[in-house]
Amino acid sequence: MKKITAIILIFVICILCACARNSGSPEETTGNTQSSQNNTEEFRGVWFSFYDLDMSDKSEEYFDSEICKMFDNVKKIGLNNVFVHVRPFADAFYKSAYFPWSSILTGTQGKDPGFDPLSVMVTRAHERGLKIHAWINPFRVSKSDDFEKLSDDNIAKKWKNGSEEEQEKVFVCDGRIYFNPTLSDVHRLIYDGIREIINNYRVDGLHIDDYFYPSTEEYIDSAQYCRYIDSGGTLSLEDWRRANISAFVSGMYDTVKACDKNVIVSISPSSNIEKDYSEMYADVQKWSCEEGYTDIIIPQIYFGFEHDKLPFSTVAEQWDKMHENSAVQLVCGLAFYKTNTVDKYARSGQNEWIENDDIISRQITDIRNRHNYSGFCLYSYNSLFVEETDGNYNNELKNLLSVL
Image (tube, rainbow, N blue to C red; front, top):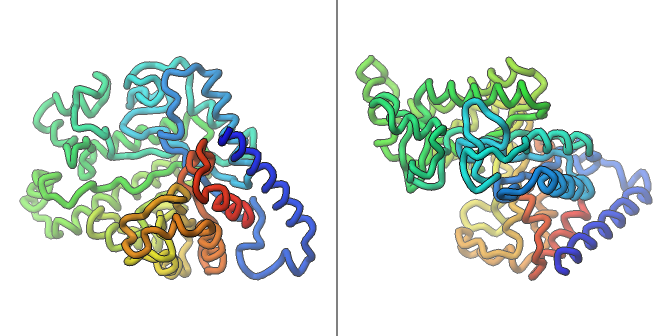
């Protein structure tokens, strides 16, 4: 019943918003900010994480039906770009020559679901005029540290059980398995996987998020760094790591464009620029200001206005200034999932998402009044279309829809 109520609310508000747009005077519907842009001009995206796409061991008919409903919902509220997780853990939502079938599809990694989910999603998105971006996590292998839970055809498991040289290509950190981001063989594997996506599916974009280095621990790549120094290298460990990540990102960009120059490359890093640089070794300023790294950058500005250390407006301004005279498109990642939750890391502002019901709408208004933002992207689908509607969810959604 609550789910039905939420859907009805969405339809009603959309109709009201459409009426308001159509009845406005010329003076009311024009202006010098991006709020006057229509849906085709403003980037309006939503992320579909593997959690949103978890339909374990379901038929093609069921998956197709659910995706149609999801994309219909997205279209009806005025969004125009969908980011779908197609390779979350070195496993795939499509038939791959390099990665096993995802366990999200069947409950067992490597088990063929009997159909191609990415093909379904591409077809259904384009039928609705939605642009679809294939979202991969390049270096994340597993959310567990147990290699035995990987399928036998997972390359990470093969490397772990291989030669000493192959074992260097994977490591465990904080209870998870990762590919070693310093090695050319790892980069080559990821590029090969990207090629098969671009060449086999009519995706509009290739997307990665903020999984670069999972830690600053030296053991992760100590063997490779020692060899680099022994061969005459002079960069510090930190600069060397940043150079490796930037080289990977540049190679990824070139790989995509060599396959199809019209496919959009996008990156969604943490919005904490200093943390990106010093902890994840992601030089987001370089990628934002120089050509050949990304077409769109979507910082995850997942903070409220009252966050103690990283208030939304301050962080949004940092990214806006960084994109002065930049050819890279700037889109703002927004945390709809925090609606009606305690944000414990915000300290004195931890109750902001409970006490207010218009945060996302005010954030959209905020970035529209800045110079360099071209739109926003919401995390995530399930947080927008929840089954439970307790607390101030309904009003937050209503206020969001009022600015679309």
